[in-house]
Length: 276
Length: 327
Image (cartoon, rainbow over all chains, first blue to last red):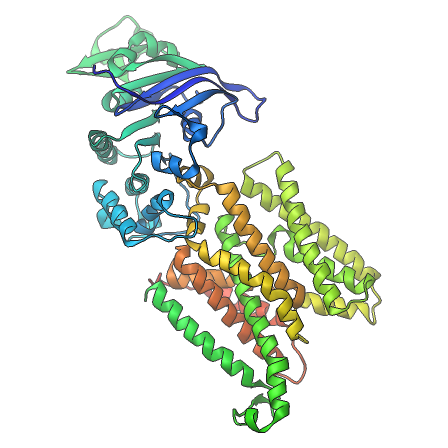
């Protein structure tokens, strides 16, 4: 595996909601390599989304430092951060019903002054973003007429209109059927090919295995393992993280993760395992 | 029709209505004054310049402020049912006016000053309380705090009404609360214009950003905004405009709720188009209602009654028929 430069580095993060409650992280250090597709993998409630929000700067750590491209996060202005990274949340509830194009245009905000409105050039960027997610036909449709999959593609286009170096995605395929999952994965791979670094959270090791070049496995408030995908997704790591007996099967150059049936733990026949 | 051409049509309609309103009234005979009279009759000239013009201007500022502020509040609170009565502003102003009528003699300037002060106090208390509530997101906390503060002021107002002299002070309070532009002078216009004009300008210039501020916090943040700071600035502008017009006109309901609704129906939800349409439509709506209030019968009909009547009627009409989105 080629050595990557580090785009995001977080050192010694401690965080708890309300400052005094139960700590989500006590001492967490992670690196996101430049140009990678990094999965933040962990069980439900392990703090995946919290980590994403800390990188975004939306939450502030009680302790620790976050560097974006070598520079301290706190030294970035709000607009610089909007140009550096974009967020695609898990699901987005909009109170008002914009058209897809109006919505994607919001991604141009970090390039506009507080009193400016979008220009023709912003419109071009927004249309190009819709094109690159294959959602150009949806341009004039209002958001509430879109299916879940279409909404996700439009949300990604909105993030791309920010022309970010880092794309943060929270459970990017959580509510999508197989066809839409495939579409979103294609878009993410193409973006990575164009040099955008992608960091996404997931609780599903199979999604990490099929999409990510790197995996950060978090559990119990710390990092259990962080490295290239093949090195992290081992039976031992995953069994410890999820507290169940996990089988990792190599198919071609990719791992597939199965849940071993508790009643026949020693049985390695394929029929005895259940896919996660 | 695009948002832009809708806006041009509305501005045209507004200008026609504005000029017609100056000729509308009950002098020399009910409903209409011939234009030639302005040249022949010095009394007609003085009437138009000193009584009708300031009142018509105030009606425009009132409608524009309430519906502009209504748009801002609905977007920021992500709730299409919010109006400037939220955050304790209107109730604060009403309480302030009653205090002035009861204890400070109730001169017009005294009422305006105390109403403005208490409207501001209402917002300040809502804000302070919202910071202390340990529950829910910022928007929910602000709404909860606003409801509590509004209820406190309403209770205080009830107490003042109970204490008021039923023959003199009580009617004055009730009339003020019903809302009216009766007896508006140039002095009133000069008092509210310096507050309303800059506030509306801020709202107009930042209209596109309202779209961003209506997004959930973490998304607005990820788009490089400073949601807290920008929302506070826009809310401040909305409250200043509302406090100013409420201090001279009393509580005029429904304009700030219904006009932003109609505007979104006309040109779509994008605030870049909807906010200017809302401001102009608000001026038209308030001006039309005030024309009826002063000219329909020999006496004065309280403006707040007419805006509530037509506002609620339009609202029911909108709710029961599904209009296609134009634009």
